[in-house]
Length: 65
Image (cartoon, rainbow, N blue to C red; front, top):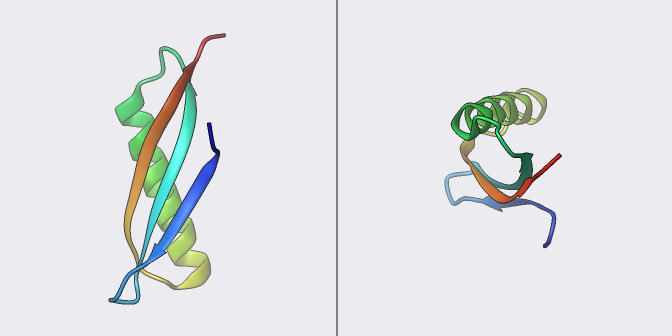
């Protein structure tokens, strides 16, 4: 499995971000993904001034404790 954060520069000067994550079993995936999307979009736009067109979350694996 490859770890990854992939950033694509769009023609409209915005960026699209793709995040591949591993989460613990039993976690509410939609809630976690929504939280990550909001936080990443805010942090990137606030620190760089670049518009974030999309943040896509891919759950690559579930981890058992």
